[in-house]
Structure formats: C-alpha cells, structure tokens
Image 1 (cartoon, rainbow, N blue to C red):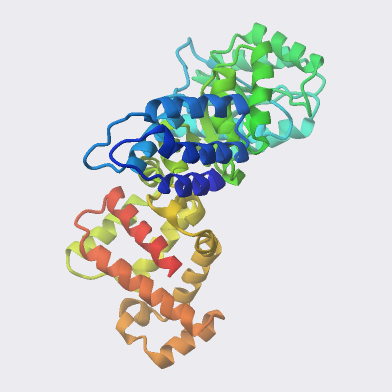
Image 2 (cartoon, helix red, strand yellow):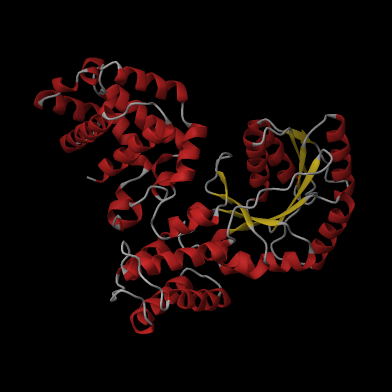
Length: 451
C-alpha cells in the first residue's frame, strides 16, 4: 500500500535545501511536487488543497533543531499533517452495550464485505476474547450466505442460518435473540451489497438499522477505488449514521488515495484495514503508523505486534536457549526462521513495516518476494542433515550437488550461504528469544535476500 506515493514523497522531500530555516522560496517547488504526488495517488482535490496549505503554514519560519536539516524538518511537518488527515489516533470499536453488541456491516457488492465480517469476527475473538456470532441478511445472493457459513466455520464463529425467502429484518432479529440465549458478546450482521447506490438498497438498510439499533455501523469499501471510495462512503453516511470505515484490498493498492481522503470527506474514522485475502489479514488502522509507512520510515510497532501474535514462541525460545548454551546457529535453524517468516505473512507483508525498506529501488524490491523465500527453503531442503548442521562441510562438489538437487544455479546456493552467515553473526548478539530480536533476524534475512 502507498508504494507509489512513498516513492514520490521520499524522493521529493530529499531535495529540499535550506540555511537553518524553511522559507517560502525553498519549499515552493517541493510542495508543488508533494501536491502532484498526492493527486497521482488519487487523493481527493479538496483534501490535497487543505493538506498543502496546512503543511505550508506549519513549515514556514520553523526553526530547525540542531539535529535536523531543513529537509528533515519538512518531513516532520508532512508526517504530522498526514496523521491529522487520517484521524490523529486509532479509534477502537465501541462494544459497550448489553450483550450482544450489534455490529452492522454495509457496503457495495465486490468490496469484500462478507470476508471482512469473518475477519472482524476472528479479530474480536482472538484479540478481545469475545464470543462472536455472524449472520447474513443478503437474501438476494444465497451464495453470500453459504460463503459466510463456510468462513465462520473456518475461524470458529457461531453462524446463524438464514433463508432467501425471509425478510432481512426478521433474519437479524431472530439471530440476535438466539445470540442472547447463547450468551454471545457480539453479533455481526452482513447486509446485501449492490453494484451501485440505489433507493431500494438505502431504504432496506435504513429499516434494518432502525430495527436492530447497532452500536457500530461500519462501511466496508475497496481501497483500490481511490477517492471514489471516499465519495461512496459519504453517500452512505448521508443516509446512515456510520461510525467508521474498513478499507479492504489495501495490499493491492499502490496509491493510497482512499486512506487519505475518507476521514476528511466523511468525518468518520478508518477503524480497520484489510491487507490480504486470508482471514487473519485485518489490522487496526493507526494513522501515525500509516504516516510512517507512507514516508518510508516503516512501522515497527505493528510488525512486533504481528510477530507476537503469529510467531511460534516455543520455537523462538528453543532457538534462544540453544544459542545461549553456545551450540551455534546452523542452516536447519535458518530454514526454520525462513518458514517462520512465511507463517507471519511472507516478505511482502513485512517490507513496508521495516524502516529503510522504502529506500530500496523498485527493481530490488521486485526480487524480494515470497517465491524467493520458497526457493531458499528449497535449496536448504536439498542439503543433507549433516550439511545443515555443519555448514562448513559445503564446498565446491557439494554445492553443485545441492544446486542440481533443487533445480537451481550454483550462485543460488552461494547466496543462501551468504545470507546464512549474515544471520549467524546477528544471532551471536541475541541474548533473549523475544519478538524484537526475532524481528531483527527477519530484517537481516530480508536485507540479505536483496544481495
């Protein structure tokens, strides 16, 4: 997400020069380029206009601290304005209600609403320890009801059945009554989508909202539609009291116009962002962390939280104990680290969260992908256990045999051994098997994959 905008902004902000302070003359060209970068990212024009005006006010005449160049000072101002545009801070779901708290999901067809219902249910179950039920009132698409039933079973949510012959209001009320009897904490109601906004759709969802009185009414929108996402959200908000927005398909959106436009246009916060198709690919939206990602500074907090949630802590502790006892770090351990990276979501999911990764040229970024991760594991699998445990055994003849065994080139084997040695050096400095140290190791692996 934001790849194009990040590249443009980081390149533009590097160019600023100055003599101790930022002035109108030395930021004029930079702000023009920032404006173009935002427009190319499909950010809505009113948002861009206000953004540039506020950055200019914040930057002009600002004293540069001893440790900051004028360029760094402008980056601080731009970062602060990005945070402000996207909503200052993360706004959590308000589930303060007599159980079950009802969450109503609205959105157009194709935005990923049904999948998001399951993702949100899973997130509430794992992170908030809630007992969650889900129900679909999309009587126009029986396939949507079946899809939700399948997803609910996959992530362990209570599913309330519905029939296409029933009325949406009746389905929802029946599900809520059943949820009370089962002492569920939350019921998420998946509504029907349309290809466009129409009076029938709005009338139906208004009646449903009035009947069930949800504590949260969330609008699910495809981030790849750019500023149109913000305009659609506004149309829904004008008809329905939205409490927040969930951006989907953000992993496929290289522009980021929706994230930068929605709060300004609707006044409603982005509460979650979908970063993939899997049911665990939903993250709370933190404006400050997202601003750091946009400016190529990474997002360490989100990465560490992700590792804490998804990493195999037993394996991490076992590896740490092994290293503490002086038993060393071998290629079998390295393979487990690469597999751990796959478990956490792969290289692509981590790239934007690591500081400095935004500075990598695009042609190198393209080489660092999850297929490369699988190839690396394939190279190690082609080694004997003796070779994995004692990498010094791997010389010319063995290297050729390993390359032939996995269908790769000799240089691929040499690259793996080089990356392993980098990781081995880092592991010698590891004293505790915690998430931060594991994250450093993963960063080292990613950096090694580029060389």
